[in-house]
Image 1 (cartoon, rainbow, N blue to C red):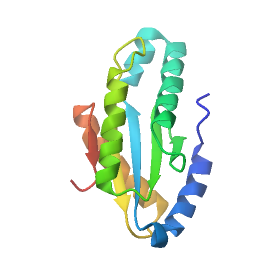
Image 2 (cartoon, rainbow, N blue to C red):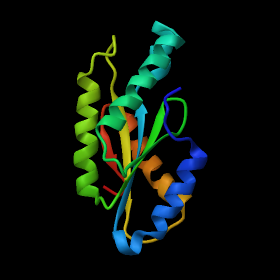
Image 3 (tube, one colour):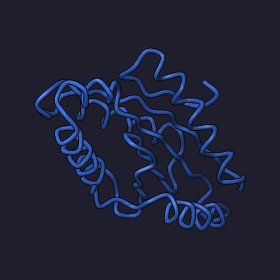
Length: 151
């Protein structure tokens, strides 16, 4: 529906990117989650919710580089991998995207929360995703926020 990569492709690409860390030096990964998405579906209907997901995917694709990886992670969650991007750069990118989404006319007010993790060494893919998920959990407590793992 969103024309984004799925989990299986994400894992394959992320493993490849982890192997390239020695030459690329750093990699950032973020999980972006639409705030209160259930309420959006309950209020406006699932077809409207689908439209929001499609538009969200377009916003992400238009505001990232060609070599960045964008995948649909769950119902209203997206994972974005930024090769050769340190945490400072990732935070700038995702704050900009958060603001674009906050100001975009979806037909109702939409905000997102995000969690960023970054590595400079080869670690297990699931551990990296878990770190971003932990940061996302912190951001979701206040909503409309981007949090960084370990900060």
